[in-house]
Length: 346
Image 1 (cartoon, one colour):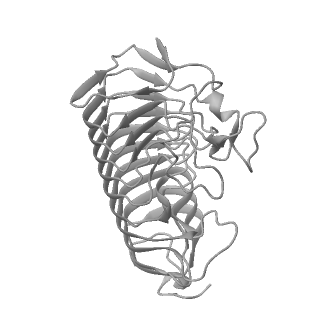
Image 2 (tube, one colour):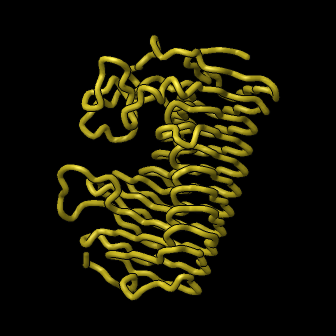
Image 3 (tube, helix red, strand yellow):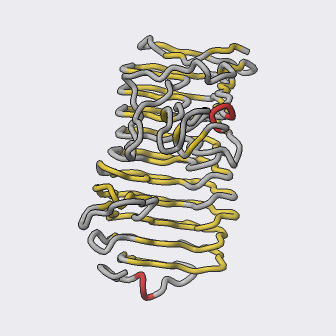
């Protein structure tokens, strides 16, 4: 076991190997954890501080970096969870209205290209786990991510303003989104992933910057809050387009399929802004859920070209829709009339 505070992968054209049986573990205290001035959180601050605790692992301005092996990276996330206030960090003396900073990403890939992560176990992130930011050509394969199912905001893999990201053959059990594609990202491919006790396979929540060309294929969802879902912020402004969810298996899911364009929208709302979706395909989504699906789009920015084909969900509740136009083929339960070309209506 090797114990360390925040560390950085500084060498280009390098391979760092953590072999099977080896563990790299975080120091067990947040007391002296740095809050660097040059690495603000890329998520909108919502009127609070944008300062963020340093990522436990950082690759910045890097090229051709590989982190591999069969070992374990343990971030000791519970020391961050106990002082969590939403996405922020509120140790004694700080409040949710004025937090000390955002909690740290476990591994931030910042303005880097050709980064490969393979074969490792990421354990107990304090906040989001693997986060490419303004990066490209990222390969994440054969990775396991685990955190307690009640751990706060422990998203698994979260590209932001990034492109050409591939995630393949991963297993994720955590307390929030299994994988989510954030604002400004494009050409993201996720294949052969198993998600347990998470919130779903997600696009969003989207604030600003379009998201396009995203595919999720051959995904198993077990005891999750949702299956495929797209989330947009009512205060934001953007379009999500060309997204495919295909061959998705649901087991014990709460909401089978979800599009929510008013996700977590407190405060002032501006007319004719927000996020919409266009050209979304849900293909061969099957299994069981409490509710088949819920689609909530905006009157001024309706969702269009949403195709459901071969979607068969055993559910206690059917579908709810607003401001969406759906094309369906072989969908169970039957799509109600309110889901067909009902645009501009609440």
